[in-house]
Image: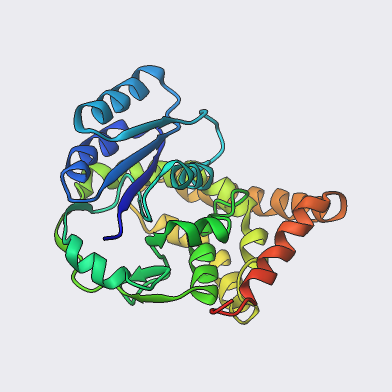
Length: 275
């Protein structure tokens, strides 16, 4: 029977993740790993205490002004000891109960399972995740989409079916307000790493990706934000894109490892599913 670890990367949102830890640990997954980059030591201690109470594995990650979710998730996968991993965010709807038998049937012979819609894969065979290098750690713009596309292009996958017996909804009003503030704070890094997203995506998707990037400020402004956001959001995006483009081409010219990492992604995408 394949074993499964639920992994969550969290940062500065103790109320979100603490609410989920108890449900996750009781959901039927085999293990839970919380990788925490919270900057406030007292809040981090609250998260660690919740992990101890409910039996989750707490991993402390260095706090940073940068978005480190990819590094945190990858660390969580390395820490896990199960055959499979499930990646969850600290503001996702809460997996309250897993039908392990249904998951076992779906996972047999597969490298990933998914629900057949959307762009993001959440269930990964751990060895395959590590083989492909995990989420690109120099990105915070659609890193999960880029990695999911790589997995689908190089791995065996199947439909998950009715794996969840029940899922508890997020407390949307409370959590979405905090999520919107977090989105604004990450806008610069989204824009700054845009070119890395573009280079690591299928060439046939380039036009759609560029259009989506141009509409990024509008997508953020559709949320309920203060009036000042209508000035702040476009300014942050423009500054991020401008500095990100300059930094990208500077690294291409001076950083051999950066060039190799981009080339390696293209190479992995071209691998046969049965390689």
